[in-house]
Length: 164
Image 1 (cartoon, rainbow, N blue to C red):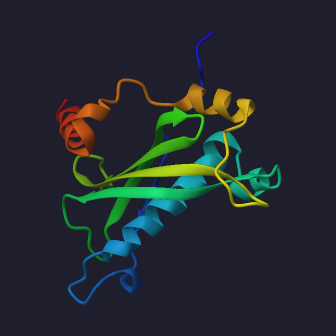
Image 2: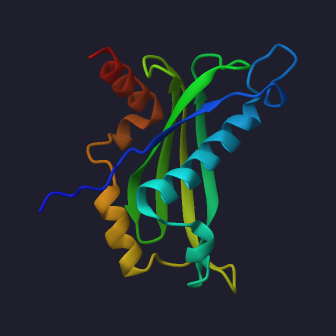
Image 3: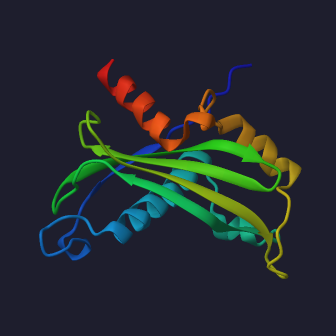
């Protein structure tokens, strides 16, 4: 049976002046906020999954690392498309890719790879993903990501996809 879940949910947001520097460019730290807020929205709209509801089961996630590349300026009042996807799943980590493009989805603006680590909510200690979560994550993970090429290689692949 073919999986009908959306692997790369997307949404659109307009950049606000309060998130920009004096030159009107989106402040670097605000990219993270836009990406994380979009992912939370995507989890609910595409999968009906709310992080805080999941935390009630005793497992939550913390950010282990971010790797971000800023490729083209994003300025005040730009409307951008943000697409997110699970690109790697393991028992003790989850890597989510977030991509920001222009509204027409023709130009890559920024890309973020975030490694999330599951933790026991009560103890704060590293945990393993429950089997039910692993099944879900494996059903939505993007295939054929070349991790050896790193984020730079991924940028090249995305740019080639945009051209075709």
